[in-house]
Image 1 (cartoon, rainbow, N blue to C red):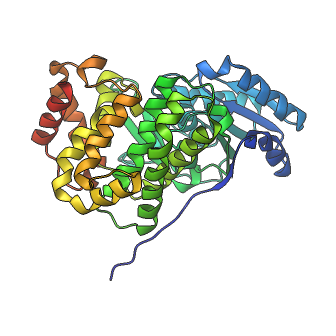
Image 2 (cartoon, one colour):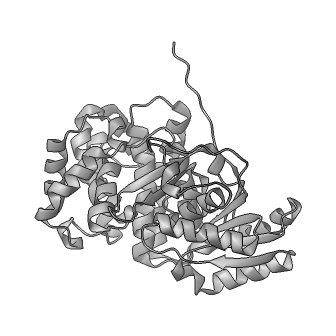
Amino acid sequence: MSITRFSFPTVIHFGAGARTLAGPHLREHGLKRALIVTDKGLAALPLIASLQAELTAAGLNTALYAGIWGNPTGSQVMNGAAAYKAHGADCVVGVGGGAALDVAKVVGLLATHPGDVMEYVWDHPQVRPITTALPHFIALPTTSGTGSEVGRSSVISEEATHIKRVIFSPLILAKAVFADPELTLALPAAVTAATGMDALTHNVESYLSPAFHPLCDGIALEGTRIAARALATAVREPGNLQARADMMMSSMMGAIAFQKDLGAVHSCAHALGTVCDTHHGLANALMIDTVLAWNFEAVPHKFDELAHAAGVAGGGSAFVPWLKSLKAQIGIAPNLAAVGVRTDHVPRLVEVATADICHQTNPRPCTAADFERLFLKALTP
């Protein structure tokens, strides 16, 4: 029997009002100068001003870095590292969705280590090591999708090619997560739907992966169950705190579960983000039913388990039709064409998806020809 290594992530403070514990946590650890890292949109909202006031009340001197937008790039990280040094910071407070948190995770790395952020991606031919302890980093998620707050990877896009690259290390994990569903109450319905489908996709794809990680399988099935009962309610009733809390939990569970690995849905989504700048959660939502319908014959017994977890009558063969119905209920576009993807995009989409690592753990081997068929099918109504 082979030896398999397991690990699970960080301390999580979960529940309404959890954000108020961030300042006391930092002071308890002897920290005094915090750099808040967030995106341009959030920076203008009362949330950030309120957080700064709470940190100040806890005795911290704060500065704000809000130079993040779209899919985060290397320059956004390097500018954040410069802001960290300029403030003389001793800790990083990441606030936002996946983009802001992915940048926040590695701002401290580049503030304390030499070179460019892209020299730390896992597949760089001369990848730089993380040689010293990183600054204290805490995360406050404001969306329920990527689960980046509990992830040990940071996804940063290349400036010129827009290809997503991954820095992977347990050393960039948050020291603590303050998961407060009240921070998601103001999310628009479309963002709630797209990020929620991202969370659901993480749980479903990680469960379908053939990699061996029974702990993640259990988390993925429960994460699927929670999202299945809560996502439509969170979209229809934006002030429903229980539904928001459920989706925040499902999001974190999906991110923990995909330590096991993902699949071809994510390879397609990464390609759509690279070529068409499609929001990652929306890209997953647009591709999930097409790819899973193709995967069904490889692992029909796993689809039975997913259907059971989601409360879908009719067994595994009913799971993909249920997904299509859920997408329609929450306002996801019906196909790729509806979000501006064209047939002439397909060759480049296929190229990027084929090169992506995620499909290596798809339950069914996926060739370039397979990706071409999947993209063309997802283009049509």
